[in-house]
Amino acid sequence: MPLNPKQQRFVAEYLKDLNASASCLRAGYRTKNPNVVGPRLLAQVGIRQAVDAALAKRSEKLGLTAEFVIENVRRIQAKAEAADDYGAALKGNELLGKHLKLWTDKVEHSGTLTLEQLVADSMRPA
Image (cartoon, rainbow, N blue to C red; front, side, top):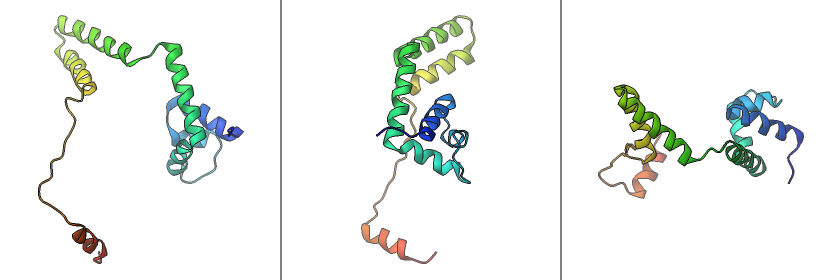
């Protein structure tokens, strides 16, 4: 289903800064809650498809790939290390480690919780 003019404007505005709330207002949606309406617009199938297609076209046009970005980080990290700029070298390593998911926060839980406990807790007055 084709987008209406206001939805097309939202897509164009969203591509500027990837900010759904601000794009909602710039596209002419009159709302007191752009932080709710913007993400709702972005979640609509037609709008999401238009945004995804435009972002893919932009990436292809610019030659942006994950490989390109990682190679740039590696190149700059190596230059920083050679120049004894260890802060910049560490930042490069941090970015590469994040890509490899080496430093993801994990929360470990111990104990058990039954469905009956959850239901009882949800029915208890606050």
